[in-house]
Length: 94
Image 1 (spheres, one colour):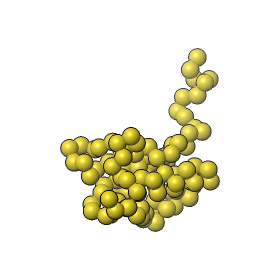
Image 2 (tube, rainbow, N blue to C red):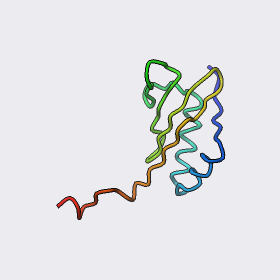
Image 3 (cartoon, rainbow, N blue to C red):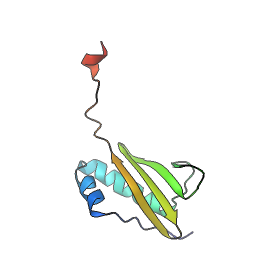
Image 4 (cartoon, helix red, strand yellow):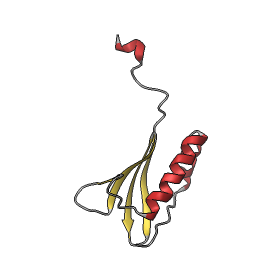
């Protein structure tokens, strides 16, 4: 199987720049692993009936939705969660 090469648009690159350095490093490494095998059964999920539409939790707080067409992997959605802020905190739970 040919290895995929992840590419991003400028807006995705800008969003990724806002992630703290350790998270960006983990996400980048995970994307390289995902690019080698975008159909990994242990870390990705199929979206809908088409196997080429996928979703993966690639690093803490980082989820990608992507599609695979031949040797091209297109990241459609890059979700970066700021896990330091939540709608409900401990004070609200009481």
